[in-house]
Length: 229
Ligand code: ADP
Ligand code: ADP
Image (cartoon, rainbow, N blue to C red; front, side):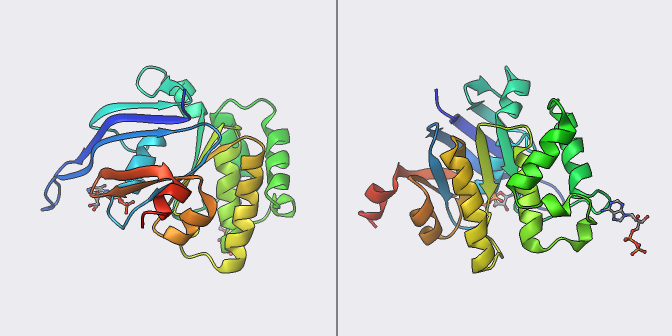
């Protein structure tokens, strides 16, 4: 089985507030192999976030099938959800929780055994051990991003998805973030990221799917794709 598999995946956002209905995904077929670093590349409005939000359980698909780690999200929603961690695009951090509190809460939601121990472990792995009890508002942008990665990984999912992980992140932080992500990949985590930067996808991903207007217009190993551009 693949890490992620989508078959005929469609999403139509209903019309609202004078905005017409919008078909954001027009029947996506995509197979993301286990162990890969997979890039979803495409311009703004292509449907990347919609796809990821469906994987994350934040957006309801209109039709089609999605499996995560072999679990169909309709048939085995709990197992499917447990297989994936998603880092959202926005750096929103709940201002009322310290990093340790936020992670323990998340661990509890996923039924992680010994949540306090797991929290300290993941904070250490993300270089945030000394920020465990800090006020959320005192965390820098880079720390927030790492906290969001920690939150996505607290239940140890085999798949980590990052939505535009380096949007608005300076070069230093970008490098730091990729060091963490590549470390996770080396330990066996399947990585999926969205970006609208070809160079980023090119330097990191071993396979790239290009999405445009809600359709997959290409999906190939990176080297092969680049040789045709
Ligand atoms: P990307 O992440 O590639 O920029 P999105 O998935 O955010 O693309 O958006 C795909 C299309 O769906 C765009 O035309 C966008 O305006 C529209 N869209 C996204 N979210 C909503 C929503 N909640 N309601 C209505 N339309 C939406
Ligand atoms: P002030 O700057 O006046 O202390 P804050 O914005 O720090 O106001 O906090 C407002 C309230 O929220 C306070 O009661 C504070 O203890 C609580 N609070 C703020 N941030 C956190 C946090 N990260 N964890 C727990 N409580 C917090």
